Length: 123
Image 1 (cartoon, helix red, strand yellow):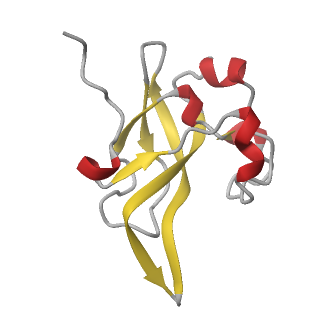
Image 2: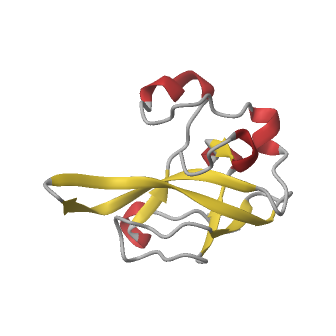
């Protein structure tokens, strides 16, 4: 019997994480910077701060706009196994099911940016 999938699932957990490949990064217009190459993403280590794209099952309408997800920073606490573990380093703006410091399990392919890649980490 295989180990259970540790990643969040849209229907069960109310959110999931988007996988972004180099080939489809251009499909994400809000990603204003190139995504890290696979070598960098697979070598993520504890202490790194990475940006992930969270997608929500329940969309929220705020100021006349509908939001189905957001990108947030996560501080890596464990890596090197079948998945990466981190703690949410951002406060979600478009959901109440997550909060700052929540634990998140993710795959290196979910990483779209490293904090060190940015001169302005809030972007």
